[in-house]
Image 1: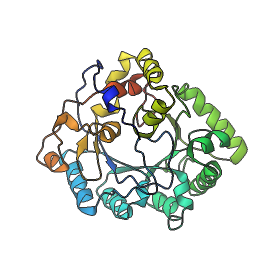
Image 2: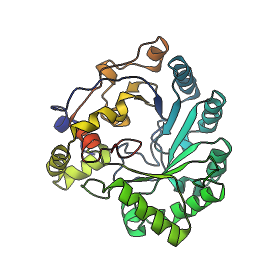
Image 3: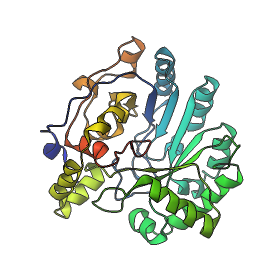
Image 4: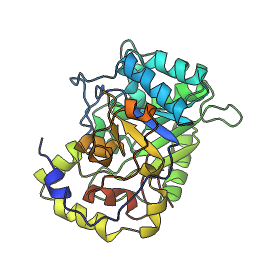
Length: 316
């Protein structure tokens, strides 16, 4: 896989600083049952990296030390970490809001049929990848049969109360473009998702997050192989909106890799850009030190282009 960081390093992206810490985003490991072309983590079934319980315990202590309200769990497929259930239960017992970023098909893998019921029993906010309401587009991006499997699991989530008014169980869906272009208007796309998924499959959900593809890892390598890297970067830079800078996720979030090192976002983690260039660790957070200066590169234009893009979807 070709590295895009040398093409992103020299950047004129505006300087950013962290305001506060509201969210710890823990990458529990890079193992996943899928190997998607847009994946900025380059996750897959053969990856072996995974966070251990001792690191999770440090994360919970750091969250308490800094009055963090949200624990955002990602991967890979976070549920494939054998300590996932322990972590969720421990975090909820401490009063933390827990988000799980998962691809629905994990619940159809042998040994993981417990996922929907477990998430529901602990009131976890489910953030489910469904990069299109079209089977052809999803299967092109994620593999044959992924769309149908995702629909079945989302229907299971709905049966448990997810996405339904008054249930308290939040189900958000995530859209990624299946090519080198920006996401369409999030509000209009969400309306299309609601109508088509509702009419065809009876699926309901709370919100749709439209995320831009980042020119790093597997997607960045794909751009290079197709000779489209410079054109895509030109698209991102041309669509940059300065008013998005105040809402980018790195201003209130820290990303934690499977070994406990701190990064300004999951994208910087995949590029090996540690917070403040110092390779800080969760142990540093326990001492009260909060990294303020945010490491930047040209990939940051992916968060400020057009309507903006973050782990919570569009910024405008």
